[in-house]
Length: 283
Ligand code: GUN
Image (cartoon, rainbow, N blue to C red):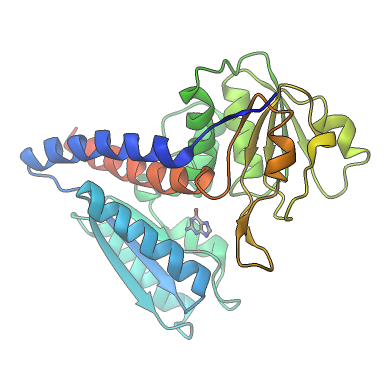
């Protein structure tokens, strides 16, 4: 078997075309969706992600503002910037790029963003809403993963979903979203014993462990759906994932590639959340 590729890149393009139409409709009603991004410091990976978010906003007609601030900004100064954006009428989404310098509390930053502008879906209120099935903002990477699976007409209900990794940003919430879709969910992490027993029993395997080529074909059940959240650069400078794609695609029924998989969908769901936020303002 050779698995069908779930191209996040193609799905993201389709969704961005639809989104542009929604943005145009909102503009006709006098609202331009606005996203504010704060980037603290000069981490090259963060700079790349922020540029990609900015380009995606331009592509869909969303107004974006990038505030690049010095890594020596104090926590109080950063929180004040967020409060100004919380009150800004033309801004519907606020994102503070992570990670932050050590002297700034990530928790305080996330909790200062107003939950109704928290388009990252990281605020504890939005996490609580997600857990209880209430309307809020869903975290972008997990949201994008569920959209990718659904885009292929795959039924999630009743499937055994195994999540490798338990980060607050990806692992934990993607398990919750798949549970909301009536999957049976198992989490694996660094202390899991006999991990292969679990990964091999997965109908849906989501790998967000942050280790290059961590999952090989003998870790995967025949016909499984495999989603790779990892992104690393190998010695030749090539982007690779947490999954050994060339081997695993031979046993999987569906597989997401790296690059062109989850990454473009994360940004697309950020735009989606921003447009939803602007629409809520209209109501
Ligand atoms: N750093 C890496 N991924 C993300 C993300 O999705 N949102 C924010 N705010 N920072 C990140």
